[in-house]
Image (cartoon, rainbow, N blue to C red; front, side, top):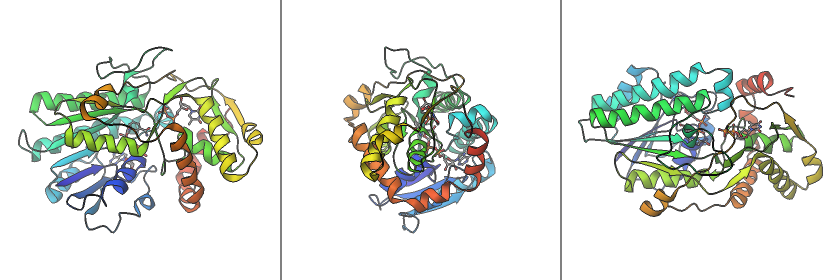
Length: 348
Ligand code: NAD
Ligand code: TYD
């Protein structure tokens, strides 16, 4: 099968391709990516030369480019990862989120409509639990929870989910949507909580925790997410939504303390000194208090189970960052440095 994977040079997309391209020589995987600041071709080194892998550098906002990619590669399955993905960036500059996440998804759907007859092809949309908004101390998100996004990022993902459902109902496009909780693992860009804290801890820099650190996220190891998507693509039902989560609810402050403990364990640094780097900074505006996913549908209908606990996944992740200093060095230069200096330095 010819599979078009958008955003394959980003964190989850690259893990997905590195995990699945070697396992499936019978499929061809075309990675359509604009190569934004968040992309890194070095992340795709394990598959770059594989016979069943191709790269198409295209911006989803450019419909003609997307159209040409469809004409050239004739995909039968689209797995749509590409998006602007960082909440803090969506607060400091929301426009790129509207463009890539809403207009980009729209262009991709239009290309499917143009190149596929109704009933042909399959569009898998990779979305987030953030579309459901914030939970209080109780309850969990299920597939029917009302949409109530808080940030420009989550609002743009909600809009893209709506477009996907509309194309299914109106044009008969075969679609599936997955809404997943927070991912972590190798290759994650160090603006997100876990890699940011790991690298700052290694460099003896402050560990900036928003508010009082009491916000809760439900962490899932990235390969467990990729396996869930692959299962839904092959065994799921058209028109259905599946929530993906790992039952790993942790308060941010406990995530950061656990990172200090594991970094200390793996480097011989003092855990107490690392914890001393924790700095409470001004809270994020519109900061959702708690996310928690009920993944019963995926577990019971498709028999998916995550393989990593937060403890095993975090150890693997930190080991990966320690073992890949060149990758880290590359992403921490240039545009990343400038953005971090402008937005994340001197927070108080
Ligand atoms: P990322 O920011 O690491 O990577 C995004 C990729 O998309 C990059 O390679 C970038 O170049 C590409 N891209 C962005 N705009 C594009 C455009 N206009 N045209 C073509 N390519 C473009 O993101 P990620 O963390 O890997 O997330 C991937 C997807 O998974 C996103 O849709 C995100 O909403 C969703 N998701 C992420 C998480 C998470 O915790 N990271 C959780 C649930 C869902
Ligand atoms: P993040 O990794 O940005 O993911 P999301 O906002 O999509 O959940 O943040 C995870 C949690 O960590 C979130 O509650 C915000 C918090 N956070 C901090 O406390 N400090 C930081 O420097 C960052 C980036 C996030």
